[in-house]
Length: 274
Image 1: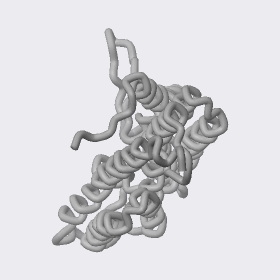
Image 2 (image 1 turned 180 degrees about the horizontal axis):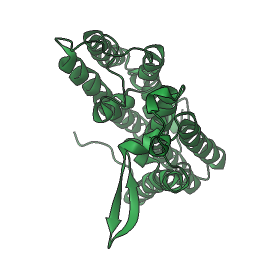
Image 3 (image 1 turned 180 degrees about the vertical axis):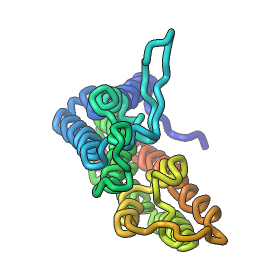
């Protein structure tokens, strides 16, 4: 059986909504006239980015790099903040890391929280794109009843792994996938003595861990003071597990989006007439 797909015109509008949302979170929602949602996503992503930079003394910028063209600095790349593309470019022009001014970054009191907030701005921007895509589908192909549009299912997965599947009625799959993601993450944190979620020590692993969403971020905040005091036997395995869990959550969110989209499109004339 072939999968249900939106019409070509709707798919093009969905692609445009995703692209605009990555350029500037909230912009893609204007295609479906969801101005309130657009403003909310814009404020949420930019507020997290700039507040995070302030709290961390802009030390996040030490983990990024400029992409130059003809000796002109063109684009600043920083994972995962780069998903909030224009916001990051403005921030990179306005801020200078306190480490460049001779301040030891470990002495910045709110550095971990700042890193978490700015990183969350990029992750949220990616899920804002999913929400904008779902909003376009909901506008172009309105459905009666209590169907969950795919953007909501994706965002629910960011809040808690498996929540998107739960909302669409797939309870077993929600427990299986959510339990796998959370179990893998917590087991990895245990192997790393709960000191694995550290941007300064493991910036690339950290970027992958951030995609686990709200539940991962709460664990990161609770363990923010933890630091390695020795080389642990299974430290590398812990990093692998926690990062894999974060990236796997992206796959879970995409699956939740796909399942919700299928349900939305399948709710055709039969439901409309009931």
